Length: 56
Image (tube, rainbow, N blue to C red; front, top):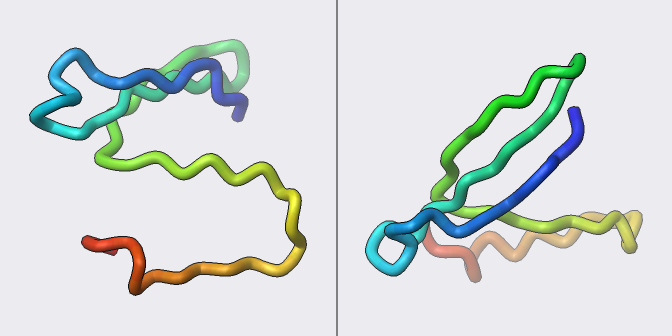
């Protein structure tokens, strides 16, 4: 799947949610997420400081 867009929802200031549109097999689908992480793949060793991310 390919990510087409990541945008703050209109009520972001109160909800903190994001609209994400992805495309797979020529079809687009929209999803709502409470959080988004952009991972570029720059590092090959993962670093997940979970104690720094409340709610996970």
